[in-house]
Length: 239
Image (tube, rainbow, N blue to C red):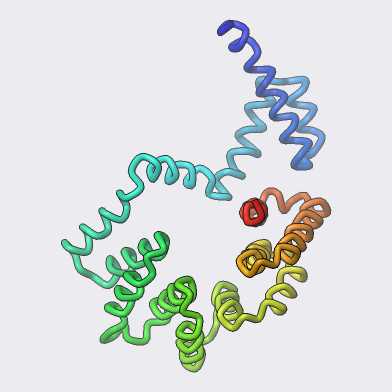
């Protein structure tokens, strides 16, 4: 039995590569190479197409992190807490606070951000945004909105992430949906679908998914970008 499995492996790999080429709309030349030069063509395709896609999307790094966390999920937190005890710097406290946010321990994260927002860092834009985000994720929307209003008096919303956070806090879901439909930014779509799903509006969440799927059908290249990851995350919202 083992002999037959080993004998069939090259053919299984060839079939998987053919499916990948067709599914992702790759040039016909790749199909020709994989079919008629299976070993060399398959190896070249993997090195030229699949590996760069994995590296670009961060999939290799994500897999490595996932394995490490599965073995010892508290390792990173314990290391950061130990590091802060040994080297109590703003940078280390901020990293620890970020870790608390990822673990949904928002109160501890905000306490650490506050401890950093003193002296020359009392008006640090990056730290303020991190605190605003933690407040919003914790469900303290009014406090987050008040702090964001103060932030905008002194700082500009210089990137898309800040604009997105501001619109989320203000609850302008109509504007967010307009951005999503006009730009095909699936990250924004995910944010909208997540809000609709939590609000019990599954029909609106499904509408977001339908728009994503229509874009994926029309624009094949989107499957090779981070948008496809956001699509998969959005699908999971509705089970």
